[in-house]
Image (tube, rainbow, N blue to C red; front, top):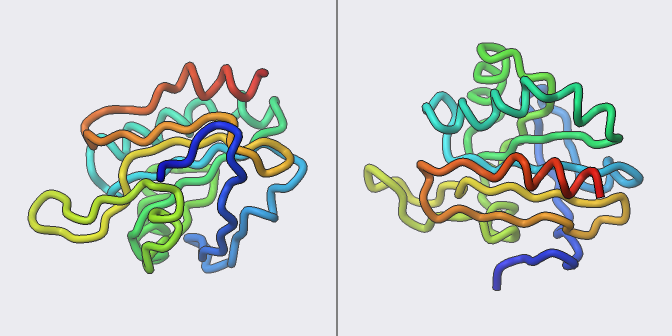
Length: 154
């Protein structure tokens, strides 16, 4: 069953592109925007995260942090982060557990790839509840960035 607004966000512990363990509980007391994306270095994924990069100051000013999650390795994500100058952590869900827990998971993806994160956006409030949930079936579509901002402002 898909996660919905009002649900408790599933906890996670993932390694970042800096090889540090990051968990949902690290963000308690702040809002957290989680962007799931299929694969680093692809066009729409880069555009999705660059949109967040370019509006990062807005989120900081609203007591909100941002993370990106994909099934790429932490090493791939480190290069992606460096190339695109992302200011926020990229987290490796290499074992595919968090993508599945959030319902943001393709069993089958393009080019016969198995087990890839769907493009999705969640906003978690200070108490760990989901206040915005959006899972996109078509990886060519972008999240509703205006809706994400509205949920943070509420």
